[in-house]
Length: 164
Length: 276
Image (cartoon, rainbow over all chains, first blue to last red; front, side, top):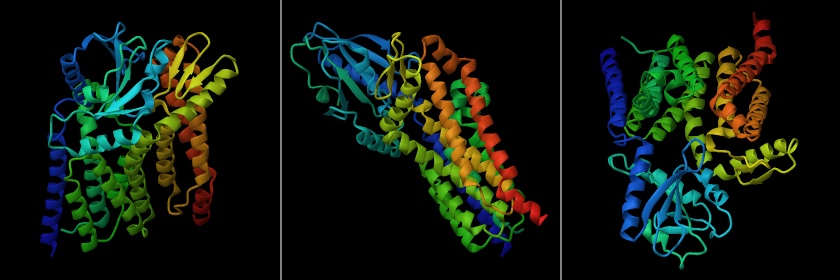
């Protein structure tokens, strides 16, 4: 009776150790910040096809964790501002606080949908779904884009389509 | 060769915690090298110490031979630990430790060890969920209190959500890592671990002390954030310089002092003294 139990304990240890190996093997190919950077590159390429040119990235906070991306376009004399938020609603007010008069109320875009308020539940659900895609080493960190356009722009762009 | 029940518990819960922690440890080691060890590999030292105490206590606890029921639970947990998601590992470890807390009732120390590991394991997914879904009200509440404190010296303080605007143009944005909730949940883990480790056979914990720990940490954190809101220089001192270390040491000191004081003078120790 003792021997089977010893084998069972050894097998149990091996299964638990296999879990450790699986977690190490299925880590994203770069750190989370890196996957977010890849998401930004995707967006840059996507926006470029629609006539947006990245002209600068500005630190919005002293620690540099929040960076506003400035895009030059044909339909607007002032640049269009995009701020990616990847954790939660903690940075939802950053863009609004940086803008004086002459700007439209910033909106939030996630997965092809535009929101007036930060989409907390939707982002959480996307993060949860992304965490389950363990076998996809190229998965991107879900990002909510805060978008601000000047009131002087000729109309407004459908960012929910451009950023999807 | 026989396997003792609490040794089986220690092995399974240890593997569970390792499965949950392996990714942040790898990321910290990869990004910072050996220096990551001084930062606990991105994991609070309170968590390492609590898990370590729990596992060592289980390994040292005398106990009966493990039963088929224990093996079945451990086997089920090992299977679930194969899911390569850290949150799943925390939940599996937490639920298992919680269940085993009741199974180990005959040995108060072993039960305490399981309870501490359950607290560590369940704290992470719960805190993560709360901070994702309730970031706006939690950060706003902290900001409102910080603005109130700053208002005692500067009447022209304005606040919008988690942003504070001082009259001198200085702006303070309160982020998730600085919330009182985050600091309180770690401090309460420290209090719980110390109380469980010292409560001995009695197992009763002066729960009111947890409230004092939470209030103490809350007050220190609001004070720390209020100093950050004074000026850019004050912010740098409190966030990136000696001020950060001072406030962290103060939080540890308050947690340890209240927990130790309560267990020296609380009902648990008196109960033990009478027994002795």
